[in-house]
Amino acid sequence: MEEETVSTKELEGRVALVTGASRGIGRAVAQRLARMGATVLVNYNGSLDRAMEVVQEIQEAGGRGEAICCDVSDYGACGRMAEEIIKKYAHVDILVNNAGVTRDNLILRMSEEEYDKVLDTNLKGAFNTIRHLSRYFLKQRGGNIINISSVSGVTGNAGQANYSASKAGLIGLTKSVARELAGKGVRVNAVAPGFIETEMTQALPEKAREAAVASIPAGRMGTVEDVARLVAFLAGKGADYITGQVICVDGGMTCA
Ligand code: NAP
Image (tube, rainbow, N blue to C red; front, side, top):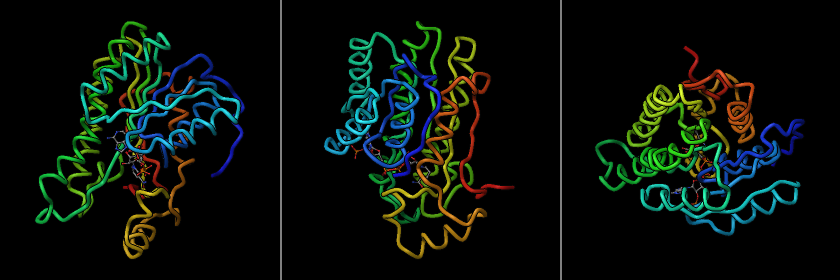
């Protein structure tokens, strides 16, 4: 994992919840926000050991964090997670909706379960956390929501009707909630990564990976740090006047 120095502690005193932070992009985001001074809640669903490793890495680097289990597709469980966070920390400032899954298939073969699983996790999961945490953001008169969408949600992708629909839905959710909450000091943005090296993309057949890399003008896959840097910027002061935006971090894949 690429280690980078973060010179400011501009998130000191902030509490950040990063969903799906036990590996991949979520892990890099959690580590970066912690290096910026935030106390980071490392959400996971099945991977307790890996979430604990992330917390340990954060603590060894001098940061603060703890693991928090919750299936984001479960509305009630997200409500309980929100209450638990507020009970312990009294406030929550940053929400990164990163948890996501794929169940790729061509539309004629896609099962109802494959469709529902992806929509329930990727889109309803973000609704669930936003729905439960927004009231605290409103009470605090401040909050910052960053939804991890995908270029598949911007352009569509053959074999990913369920995933693309979930990620396009996240963009609609982002823009609508941004409009609702902007006047209350809450910013909501979406980050749309392209093809990033994680376990999610390692699972793809070699031919599909080669084809994807060939479609990237920058000539390489992205790294988790490429995405984490953008999320960190959106979480920080430099992005104070940015809301309702979708920013692609994709090596030029979606250049018009
Ligand atoms: P990944 O390596 O497969 O990690 C997915 C994470 O999501 C894991 O920490 C997993 O935790 C968590 N998760 C899955 N279902 C969950 C649930 N129901 N509740 C809570 N956590 C859950 O994925 P990644 O590649 O880092 O992707 C992270 C995000 O970026 C996803 O939203 C993905 O769609 C998006 N993205 C990725 C790429 C890419 O090229 N990799 C491109 C565009 C967008 P457990 O194991 O504990 O369940």
